[in-house]
Image (cartoon, rainbow, N blue to C red):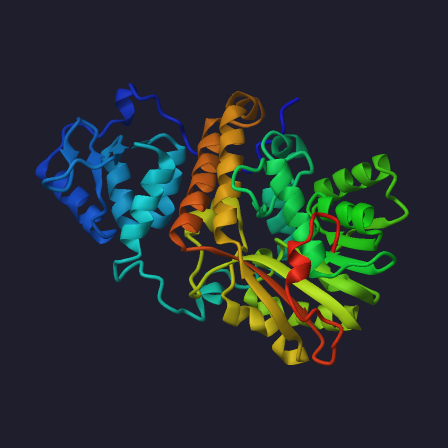
Length: 425
């Protein structure tokens, strides 16, 4: 039985030899438009090949990457809204990329960052202008369903054995994805200074791996919240199979409904889905949940300047998403006078994590096609490749922020506890 095509892009997928989908003869105006497009995105070092084989490239250079445009309509769409139409036309097969998709995306992103139209300039209204009210209680559930409830079997093909869909940690660059994800979970536990018998609340638990790890390796009791039905079902099955039902409780509920008080608050990979309009709301939840001497940790994709995600990404991959700046994150802490104890940026670790994911995704290309279709495959290939490129060039960051109450003096004087062997701090 095929997994429903909940996330497939509803666009035709033309054959390379389908004459009905070609643009006919190339005219001078087509070449002019192509040059205008390349100029608009910063004149990246790439070649553009039009539908009749006409090649447009920077003079006195041989670019390593290029793009093939299958018809005139695709070229016009690129000129009008490249941030939306490149993705859709690539997914539909109307654009092909030569020289490697990651290398191509890096080349384009670097060039765009230097152009006035695309330069990442501060824009405090970026999130609100592009997606108002998308992360309300009902909107958040719809957004999460769009991305996460498309079948656990799909994610099992390319995530690690514990099903972690967040940045791994590579103390050794040659570490396997499985080892790096375990190292990430242990790093989080050491930053929280977890001790046997403590209680932890987790906001946005994914498939539940971190909650199980905290309970199993550190002897704590965890209450974990998530609004993805498929993820919660999976997490409960794993906890039962591992004999952790008495230590871990998975709640199919929104973070805004967290109750109780705890020794630690942790959120890994959820803040991207909260939205700045709701940071004070999340901060209030943390304030009422964290004990006086408790510690908290927020792990999130971030950025250096407030800039909206691309319209294609928001429409096709992660509706409602927004990676915050460190300044924007302070809306979680300042109203309740939380003290920021530690900030670490794991940007290059996330680039390496996405490289592992993309490699495994490509290795399971045929099995993914059995579940979805070619358009879906190309959309996710573009998404993962774009992530690698964005983290590599520094357009995206990965922040881990540790915080506590201002009166909490039971905090370490050094960072030696972060270099302890896994499971021992």
